[in-house]
Image (cartoon, rainbow, N blue to C red):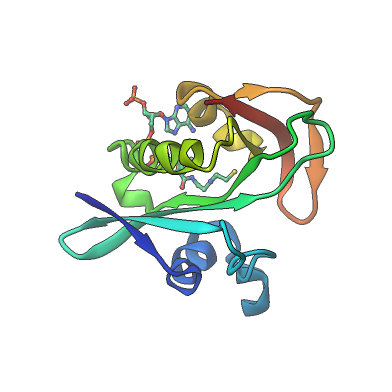
Length: 144
Ligand SMILES: CC(C)(COP(=O)(O)OP(=O)(O)OC[C@H]1O[C@@H](n2cnc3c(N)ncnc32)[C@H](O)[C@@H]1OP(=O)(O)O)[C@@H](O)C(=O)NCCC(=O)NCCS
């Protein structure tokens, strides 16, 4: 397995397949995808892209740090889950975030993925809330 930096557009197939199968192609473009400071990582197995994650400099109003990174679009192909690929993407992202002198990474975590985020060091910092049409989420942060 190899982790590489990829372009935002390279994430669209997995975003569509795994995260937003019923939404419009335009929903696969996330705000800030091409902003300075944004970056996208992919895990490759035999040249196949099996896991993606995207990182944005974006401050959540509930978190006090002046500069923050946001994690979005974390997804691994079903048949490749539980092999440590998402963790590998996070472990590659953290030094890049630290190099930007930023010490918090946050995400709106789907309730169904809560166990994953807890396992890799995120903590819940909100009550449950809904994001339509996806469902229940929690605000989570990881201090780095
Ligand atoms: C959540 C998701 C991205 C995790 O990807 P993954 O590549 O399977 O994760 P990893 O293999 O790196 O998991 C790291 C650890 O978390 C554990 N883990 C993964 N998903 C978990 C879950 N839902 N609940 C509890 N633990 C979980 C793994 O078993 C592993 O633990 P281990 O080190 O003890 O073996 C993947 O399940 C997925 O694509 N889900 C559907 C899309 C989604 O919900 N994305 C998040 C949107 S907020």
